[in-house]
Amino acid sequence: MLKAFSISIIRTLRDHGYQAYLAGGCVRDILLGREPADYDVATSATPGEVMRFFPDAYGVGAKFGVVLVPAGDVASKIPPSTTIEVATFRSDISYSDGRHPDEVRFSKDPGEDVRRRDFTINGMMLDPVTNEVLDFVGGQKDLKARIICAIGDPVLRFGEDKLRMLRAVRFAARFGFEIDAATLAAIRRLAPQIHQVSRERVRDELTKMLTEGHARAAFLLLDETGMLHEVLPEIEAMKGVAQPPQFHPEGDVFVHTLLLLEKLPHPCPAALAWGALLHDVGKPPTFRVAPDRIRFDGHVDVGVKMAEAICLRLRFSNHDTEQILALVDNHMRFAHAMRMSESTFKKFVRMPHFDEHLELHRLDCQASFGDLTTYDFTRNKMAAMTPEAMRPAPLVTGDDLIAMGHMPGPSFKAILSAVEDVQLEGRLRNREQALQFVAQNFPAPK
Image (cartoon, rainbow, N blue to C red; front, top):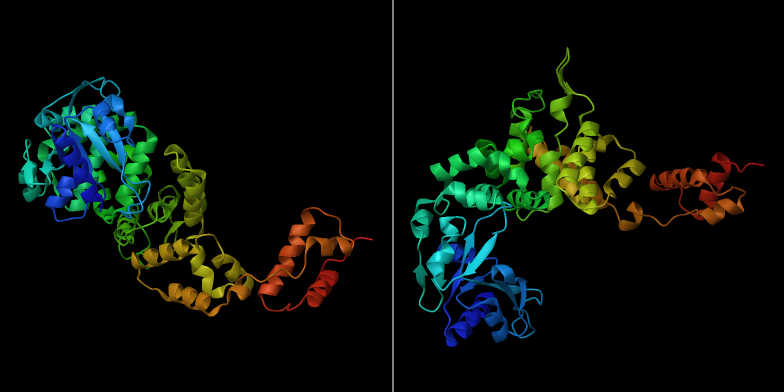
């Protein structure tokens, strides 16, 4: 449906005498036999002309020649928020800020437009009517050779937008391609300049690497290019940090983390992916060799603080930060699951997004000794519980405590929590028993 709509845009523009083609990543994906996530159109029409032909269109970067044409409607069954990006052929004149061109000149030449793009595999255009590929930069050759190669001088391309260095790593990992030697050398040389890119853009690119299904390959490439040292030195610090072989026969903390990333589900929730990456981030600074074995005393608490600093640095939302920190904070609690009291276990599995905690535990086990006994125990015990048993209705309320002579205050929470614990243990089955429990264990002051 989306492809058909983009072709209809191209036909409309051509009917009015303009050049128009599919462009960029969608062409790459079509040639690779993949279904594109979105479709972009490149045209000789100016933004004003595009908006004249498509009244619902709106400019998001009209200064740079970019217009969005809404694609969604009831008849097409395309979501209402879906848009096709239509960009005017252009050439860019210098990039003072390392992201935006200082000046844009619209063009009638598709070849000129292509040469200012990032990589050859993203620099092709396609006539969807004739299936002719316009390839001015050798993109088809590099696709066949499985190479990520910057268009023209890689130093200039990365100088225009430093985020392209991370994009090169992500594309190489996603497609299993090699990075061209000159392109790789430029990344290594310019890696420290990634700090000129907004933290939000860096975060989003790293999140894509973690969730696209090739996280291990991406982080190996980040390390190889020197980018890991710049964007996540806390992960680089895991390299060479030994672990007790009786618990981690796979190797050091970095090896363990990469194995875990390799096993991430696809698609993967972003918070789970980041929780997996950071779950052992506190191990390098807490490493010590004790008389009995290697130890990481307090690594969870240290790791939570480090993960919080990383989330703050990369400007995660409060919601995402909370879940990432919860994953780091609770990943070792599964070691006690089979010995937990009923009340502790039920409260444990009631945590928000517990499915992500359980999945992280499974991945953690599979990336080390491979024993899923606790994972299976937790799943089976949860499956045997009714929702009412896990979250029973309260037997005692604050009003009940007031009626019994208690004054509202901090003690209320402690009393109600104690009642809930005994209720979860199955020792309180009705209101009368609960009130008697309070009277016996928490007598009201006289």
